[in-house]
Image 1 (cartoon, rainbow, N blue to C red):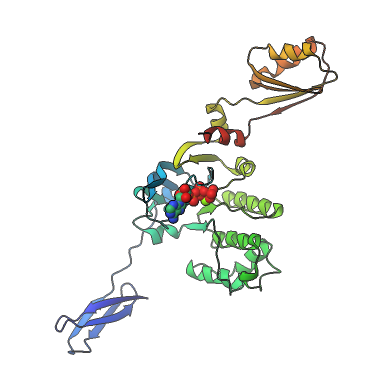
Image 2 (image 1 turned 180 degrees about the vertical axis):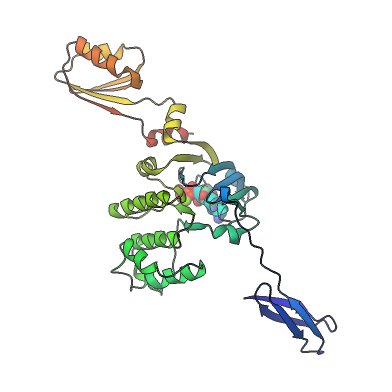
Length: 353
Ligand SMILES: Nc1ncnc2c1ncn2[C@@H]1O[C@H](COP(=O)(O)OP(=O)(O)OP(=O)(O)O)[C@@H](O)[C@H]1O
Ligand SMILES: [Mg+2]
């Protein structure tokens, strides 16, 4: 139901009327009895094209706070069913980007399409496609967890039926009847995730969903994200837990001082930085001869010796040559492990400056 102010064509008295889109009302002016008809405009139905469903497209997004540029001309595209990790140091612009993506703050420049719908022009319609978990999750303190979820189900125009099972799924069954004002931070966070996935939205936007969660909660959120991906949900997630992002994300974007400095798969970023794996070799008895034999191999970048163990940074393809060099120098290999460069190393390199 919408309200509308209309002006009497004869005496110019303002009348407040209420109706639904498409309703036709016969009116009589209370002042001069002039009769008239008012038709509420039909609601525009904005439907995404099937190919655009559950996609995220951000182009040339810039957001300034007074003179400070928090997000500087960033562009990225997330495909349907992809998990895109959004990383960056504190204050880099992650939350600002997310809020702009949802039209929760006014962007200075750029376009954002969610499921192909222009968020800045049709925010209400675009947001129907999204489940959002903000950085600072907030609920009505005086309502219970269940009452809160049911309230949001009503706002989202989705069924309330799944609310009790969601509460249970996120480990809040025992607290379901407690007022949210008495909840711990982690409990509020869990309820925030339940609210985000309410109604099974095609796009999930999560701003640090694991913040304040216990290890079991972190695993639960990770599993849920994976489960949603299997259903075809597109997930945009910002996080500081790099091991988790490395494990679940198809691609990552790294923002530093408002600039998107990298976006690719974790593997692709490693290659761009030419980061090499680390071989850890334990021998029965380490000698300078063995250490030098490895150090002198072309393609070996760094060798660190500790007791009977050598840590070697080198091209992955050099593994066989390293083994041979150690054996020829009289070493007997007890253990050998290869560790690929982690997302943490990639992150550190891209956010150095
Ligand atoms: N309302 C605001 N007014 C002025 N400056 C703001 C406002 N909100 C954010 N900023 C500034 O914009 C920059 C980006 O902030 P943002 O919250 O987007 O960072 P973030 O990447 O989400 O950081 P974190 O990892 O700490 O959550 C920061 O320098 C911050 O101080
Ligand atoms: Mg933030």
